[in-house]
Length: 259
Image 1 (cartoon, rainbow, N blue to C red):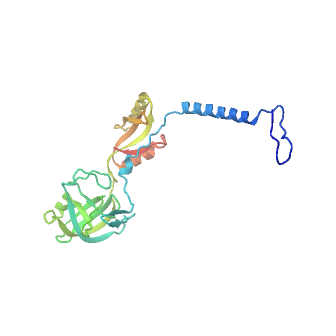
Image 2: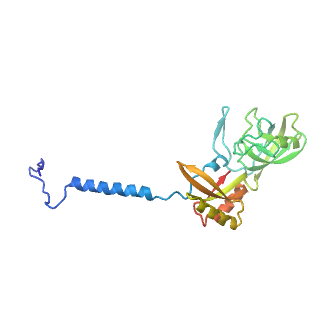
Image 3: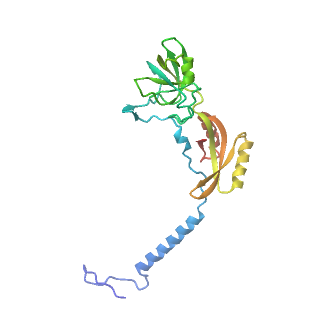
């Protein structure tokens, strides 16, 4: 086999007569790696958990945001918060629409919108014009007009006797976090299976341990079908997270979802 002289030494490089050419060794190694990778792709089992981002939409947020040219910096804690100012209320045009927390607005519920208090803060709003007060839960952002400090649900405005005038001067006092956390329909997903029989088996096991509302839900992920086992249901996020604490010991990949 012809070799090129080494220009730095003026002699031919030494090559053992029993040693395979370097290019042949590299080619063989490449083939082995390619074959191994191909086999690995065929033997990877389906994922035990399919990520679900549904909860992200309803998690309380403390991110800075800007509306109508005003920038707001939500508080991390509401401890000791007290303010006075003008309250307004919002009703039919927003009823059944999503709030900033992700909940569906119910004008007949006792809730409020505030520009900076943490979501799910418990507040007392007192009408300084007549002395009436009501305890509410913050689940929305607003108001953003005329320097108003809080926007009340229709039901709350009724209790403060301010529906007809539309606004009133109030005092807002934070009372801590609303007990029970975010209301809604929550489940704990404990597994996802490519075979329905396996999912049904786990569902029956979960129902047998007391979680009667456990269900199996079909999901399509990148053209592949998975049967998700979701334990529940729970009426608020706190209860779902409490259940997650006990379920995670057996199912480390378990996580909370919102329906």
